[in-house]
Amino acid sequence: MKRTISTGFIFVLLMAAGSVLSAADSNWIVRGQYVKTWPSTDSYQTESVIGDLPPIFSSFSVDSGQGFGLDIEYKFNKRIGIVLSAIFTDMEGTFVYGFEPGEENRFSSDPNTVDFYTINGGMNYHFSPDAVVDFYLGAFAGVFSYDSVTFTLPEIDRQFKINFDDQFSYGLNAGLDIPFGDSPFMATLAVKYLISDLKEDGGPREIAIDPLIGSIGIGFRF
Picture (cartoon, rainbow, N blue to C red):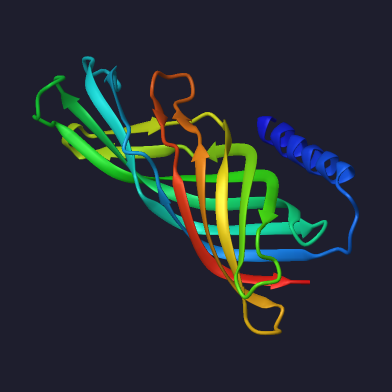
């Protein structure tokens, strides 16, 4: 339900933005991209209970991952456009179980990927639309949605599953569109910085991941 409401909000925002901008010839750009994700190096430690085992401290942390993205931009004039973007990627998560705070002894640990997607709506300003390289900056807002992740702990013959809440996100992006001559195709480079948390559903774990997402791909103008 939260995903539906958030997606609907984004489309309403885009339509409202379009109504206040001056009309011009339509100019669509679609960008397909390979993305690399670098979250902040934050981690969370808490006292955990798994099954019938006594409570003991655990930690959860995330590291870089990769995936793909899609941008669809409508330019109202040469410089101003609204954009809807979707990114599907993952992060490497590590769960460590069984240690005392301040000590290095570890009882059991397991790495696994945390899959997520984000859908954002925003606006871009193009500084050099008629140049060989079109440089733009933008801002956006949307939603992060995470899949649950299960960690296997063979030393204690247990599995530990973490579910995550959907989170609101916002951020800034910068990019380059490099046309292939007079062709409608172009090379695209971009970097996005997002503000978002990774928060356990109904639990204490919350990590400010604030990922930096770099992308490279191919665009098409029509």
